[in-house]
Length: 311
Ligand code: FDA
Image (cartoon, rainbow, N blue to C red; front, side, top):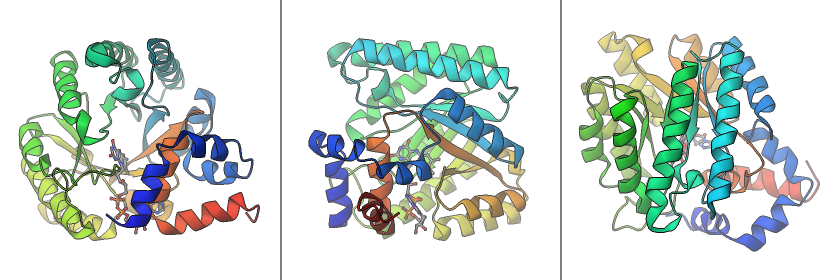
């Protein structure tokens, strides 16, 4: 992995740096580029605007790696609040939520998986009442097995629960085969975490090739693939394949992050594709922001200039 990317991903886990960066005032300009705001009302405002201009949305209440049960419970409350707001705004058919099991208690010791599964079920029940859906984000590889187990259990009641797989992991082609059944919503992304070579591909080329193979498996299946990438080298052949096969654009999604390549997001909608924008909101933006910086050196420059007060 590129050394700059590794260093930034390591910084994402540093409490000292987190404290320094989150209290620096100029950081706000950078945060605003990638994060909708701090409250459910902020998230709704952005979602409403995106839906009005042709996009679908997945709202992510920021937070991960919670260390106590009370905090996990507050995450559930935050999701219930935003799901109710989505329903009240009449947006449930276009706006869903994404959740991280680590924000719901997955790492709280031996009972962590059970706690997270119960909390995720509460969120799914609220989503079902509101008429929307839930996608369970993928985190680092130590959680993959547990997360897919929880998703499988949730799907027994709510078959629309979305799974996320990461092309950088060597196991993911097998996971795609297992997840490509009828109606199965699967988000395929490259993977945002620093992973050891024993479980993950190391070069950008290998990750991209893995993504293309996984995309082929999902497209050949009977599910609902959701391609989460900004990479033109992946998007171009995928759009070509969809066009050539005459596949109904409603049965496939492209997904991109709020603030990343907005012109490409627009172009895809204008071409008739379904594009869902992943919109994070909340006060716990540090880990999310650091992963976005790690993806693109140009963002680090933007960030450092902001910290130096020059933007
Ligand atoms: P890549 O990083 O190679 O970028 C390709 C091009 O896109 C760049 O050259 C640049 O032009 C542009 N670009 C990409 N990132 C940018 C940025 N931050 N700022 C500006 N330009 C940028 N990961 C994970 O581990 N678990 C998950 O659950 C999810 N969920 C998820 C949902 C959605 C909707 C998306 C789009 C992504 C995720 N990810 C994720 C993140 C994903 O794994 C990956 O880290 C990023 O999408 C970056 O990879 P790309 O495929 O975009 O390619």
